[in-house]
Image 1 (cartoon, rainbow over the protein chains, first blue to last red):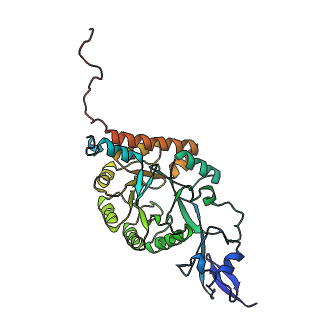
Image 2: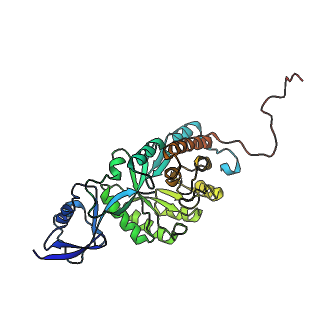
Length: 69
Length: 277
């Protein structure tokens, strides 16, 4: 399968062509986890993950809450 | 103002009772006036134990990238301190521009199922972690416009605090001294000016080192205190969390009770009449 390269949390990451954001999050074992996602600095709410097809050079951020003041 | 050692007037018993009852931010009342951070603890068990000992209702968290490849089974902070039990206050720790701060809080809102309460901090430099006020103002405007309830870390400058309030921030949170420094309340006079004019809660948000610092902040008339390092960095964090809870309560009660004026003269506590000598 052809792959494309996206940027995931600042590092290069290969995904299959035509894969969606939902597919990516699933491949990371993060479905159902409390994470938030943005692509190219736009927040993508989880109901939209299925429809959002990843494009080459998309900058994807997946974040969690950690300890802080 | 209490700094002038005159008891605060205008607080009748009922008002005082209500004020003592809790801290109201953006229309919601919280039982505790102590807000605590979740950074710098040994593990999540210690975090949770300290949070419980502090009696807090509001805990701050920060937003960071997921560690790719190391996840799933990893314990998560929000399992230890769940949003079902606490109000989670996401911060923008580490942001140096308005743009990054706004983006971070948009992600936080998504992460927390749309809840709008947030702590804005836009830092100026790594040495002082002082707020960059021009960027803070810019971010506050954008966030308020976007529907956030913004609690804002700011300098202890009454003019900046007033501008933030006019923008629509729901709480102003001046530093008492540098973040994590433990230097305590360095400028009570400025804090008093801010408290005197404020129509939203004033919460001291940095610099507390020990319980007396928290009590002093509350005696000045602050509505609350936010701290992290003072608890997490103590030799016994859980015991210090309890000390801070007591200090905030004691300081609040003393503020409401109205302290006696300072005067450089003695005044006997026992009556002079009827002495046997």
